[in-house]
Image 1 (tube, rainbow, N blue to C red):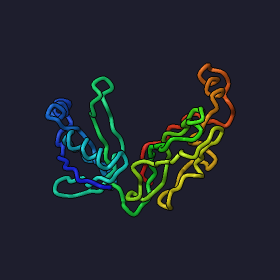
Image 2: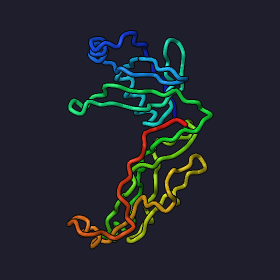
Image 3: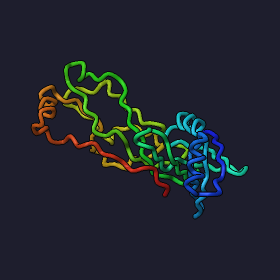
Image 4: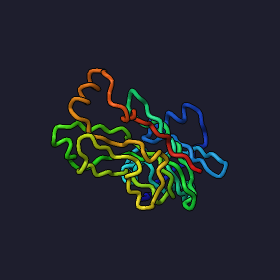
Length: 208
């Protein structure tokens, strides 16, 4: 999915100018590509609308000085106190070249094991994948309806439909259903059963 976003060139990088940009409801940003880096700014409301439409890894057609560039959002900086976006980095992408990005994992369905009293544990919340920009999914949905107590879903069981490659070992666990006793051991700090990996944080999008 792609959307169009208008950007304007920043001609001055002084703090006073950047402050004026933010006070005007805009976000200072940088457009990277072709061994160049161009300072720009974008309207904050339009940017948020665009990201909601395309997703974190979607393709954005960024218009700068009457030229349109296919870009991906490479980095986003937020003010932790005000919870406001203060800066964005965009990377021009070649639509024919694969890139590596992190995609959120969403578990869907009501697991059989949970209905029987088991406890769902999600070990991976993101998967690092390699794909053409146009084939990157907004999220990876995994149906856990048939997952029973004591069973797991691993990376090797994810149906990619041939659209992308997953950069994880096939036996890495994404989700499992713990028996009630196992969950109690985890909650009390006791040793849990082996084979349940810790949450893995992936990398941000990177162009090859």
